[in-house]
Image (cartoon, rainbow, N blue to C red):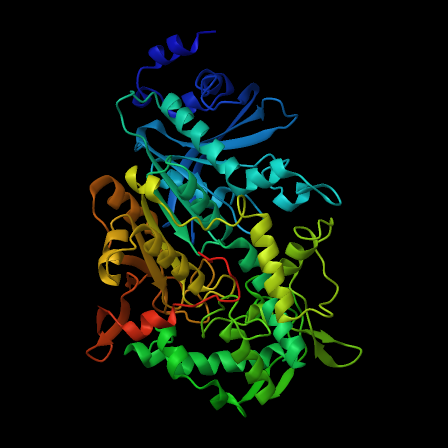
Length: 579
């Protein structure tokens, strides 16, 4: 067998070989990252496997346009010296003739550290070698929580830090070296490195931007940062219902939601079924006006609704009129968590977001709707605070708003250096020339849009504290731009507001900014549903907000101080600053 150096010399350039040529274990073994590429890591060359896929169709991908691609899936394993562990990484390699000197880092969602083929396939369509990792959790399909505890009461801290940031970082460093080798890039040739992820994947993206300078550009959606606050916040709606002693049928909350959308839709100057100004909605809509509104929902065996796409929760037929109790629940949820002394602990969802966390369950024996404890919120109490190998809280007996605040603080303090991911000083990333496009659906039902706005403003306050608001914002936008997506739900276009567009091509705009210096003042977005499917729309860059003139025909991005103020919250329930 040829040595690596003689092998690469024989290959010459990437254009000289085909995808079939590179997609063999023997070829890959010769182009693995050299020993010492990442200190403390040893690659197992015998673990290499390759799989060739031709004419794979990308269709209805949330973050990438439709297309047909061919690629080689390369996987191999490595160990950390001194540990008895195995970490698997996968790199999806485009045909060398289509390679564009790019490497794409991808993240996951929920409690997964990768998103599988859905994200890396989009990278292939951009001519990028695209990577993912299993974080050492046992397989590419394994969830982080499966190995978070070594035993009840004992945290697997290696697992925690791999999940928090280290696993993605290692995959990135190894992947960049692998890309240069397999594509036979000359040392002087620039390899552009990008990141794409949403939700937990968005948090993972910020974990890299905040700590390292490996990435040239990051496309980050609805990040699950401020981890302690964010995860416990899923229990807030439950505690509101328990505290107010009213458990609304899902259809009743849907009636409130529909009335909210109907009132707030035209506040941007255009009536199109999309709430583009949730800020004005908060200021102008009186939710008490929905009291007495009739509602009816047929019996259902499941399939979506407020539980989100893919829900299989069955519900009986629901009839009635919106009650004052239901409105009180909805208003308290939107107002956000305050402790029992009235001080604010966290932000909540914008009006026009579905009340997913408030979903109740029907008791067939009593014929009543009752509390349904959020499983996502529960796990961060049982597993990550109480360190018990379970994800279920049977009830919330005795849990108050103060309890939620205290749980948030304990999670924050315990996992500040691993999960929290809110470090606001991005100076090193900025100096390295990195760029960030950050976006968040205004009608997100899982991660409040105000969470992202708060982080943007935290970075501005820390990095540019001297100038006035407009000057500091402009300075920040030199490398970090934030967009609120009208009508957008959690990491996707919103079927409840089908005329709203989603930034499906954000990576293309990011690449144009990084490689050509074309910073986007507006984000391109594509309508995903209904009669207008495929229509292009533009999204204003925060803090500017959309306002339509000419009977809804002309979009202006306007500065509105009243609007800006609605996105600013004082979280005075904590003595520590909450970035």
